[in-house]
View 1 (cartoon, rainbow, N blue to C red):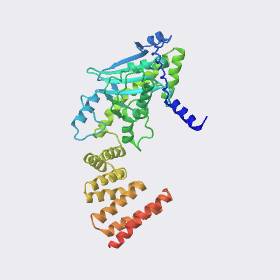
View 2 (cartoon, rainbow, N blue to C red):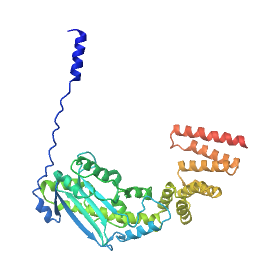
View 3 (cartoon, rainbow, N blue to C red):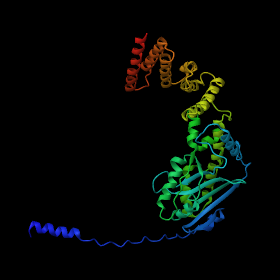
Length: 415
């Protein structure tokens, strides 16, 4: 066969219509059978709920507003809301009085990976009469869709308050929801407030550990007696599913319950600190608050807090507050006050901040005060600091030295 005929035959083959394949229907969802230990778990205090996707176990507890958890009664949450209503500034942790709030925490079978399942969903909600704790417990892995559906998170619109929820709890929930998306309604996106972030903001360099249990003991006045360590929770759940005995699992539910109650009191305590209405805190904590306001571009609030630190604590404790106060004063064009605050901070701040303070002083004296001699003095002090500080990397020191020497030569020419 000639080359031309082969080409013609190939064209005919390309032109043939390919028969459509009949799409095979996916099998309908098969509702799993209830585990054989259902009655045992019900006798332990869990309520069985049946839905279209299987069963889920539920536990619910009501707390009166006067319930005491550590230093705070739960009704102090209303006082926190009132503070935010009266605030003349915006803050990412502010809540409205009529805002629907959902305190949320999970327990999982691991820390990462598609195989990690949520076996406990915990919610704490405010009603007109009390606070209500609701916990949904996974009957076994086959009933995951039942638990997720029963949570009603596909129906709710609320501000979710968590502790490390932005990085862990909510992403885990989204993963499990995605794996069940063929049978579940779409999960709603919610506003979130993560109290781990605020704790790091408030107590940076003041607390060694930021675990919720540590915050409870050091700041909230709550100590857990007979608590199950969090790392044992997955083992306990898997054992309860295997053996059918829920005794230890009920202690995991108490652990989760305490987590949720502490979210309320931590929100209250954090709010009180932001409004400077909590005592027994260090200069460092209040300095962190002032810096947080500065980062949010709330200069009046930042200056107010930092000035109180410099007035109420000794010079050594207030060194960082003086430094951050000076930055705000300079932004507000209060240059004489900024100079005083930078100078007051110099002997009590770490070397990197000290170098920044010297640079700011040199800049103010050069550009605002037109005092080139004083600007040169602070420039030379900065160069000396760069040279003498051994902890800095040589590459970084060389880079800084070039910049500072340029300033030195420029100031030398101005005199």
